[in-house]
Length: 212
Image 1 (tube, rainbow, N blue to C red):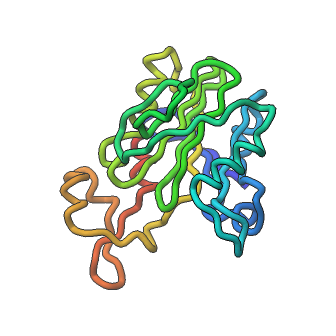
Image 2: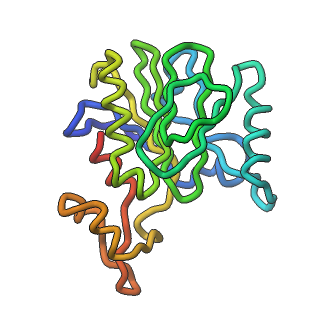
C-alpha cells in the first residue's frame, strides 16, 4: 500500500512504495505506486537487477527492461555521475547527468540504482516527468530539489506535482564516514545518527524528502 501526505516545503503528494516490496524481491514484476498508476498514459515502476537467485549485469538489466517495455517507447538512460545535473530527453547517446527530464509524450526515461535512491517527480497536468538518481553526493548537492525547480520553471505548480521515492538503502545499514557531515553541512546534521559500531549512518530518504 502507498502512503500519501503533504510535504512542508512544497505541497507535494509523497508516495512511498515498500522499501523491499515482495513483487520486487521475488519476481521480475516492478513495484508500482498507486498515485502514479492513476495518471493516464504514465508508465512507471521500480524493479531489481535480476530475479531472486539469478545474476545479471547492469547492461543486461537495461536490455531486459527495455525489451519488457517494447511498444511503449525507447528506454533512455543516463551516464550517471553522482551530481545534480539534468538532461532533457530525447538523446542518442546517454548524457552525463543524474536527472532525466521528459517534456513530451512517448518518451521512457530510466534511472539505475544500487544503494542510491530513485526519485520520480510527475506533473500530471502538464505531462512533465523528472527521474532522478539520488546517491549521497547528488543528495548533498540537491538533485531532487533541482528537479522540482526545473519543473516549476517549466510551468508546473507545486500542488500538481506527485513525488515517489523508490527502494534504496536505509539508515539502518548506510554506514558512512564523518567527512559526509561536511558535505551536508549544519542543516543536514539531522540526517545522521550513530550506528552500532560508533560510525555515523545516513538517512538518504529523509534528506530527499526535505528537498521536496
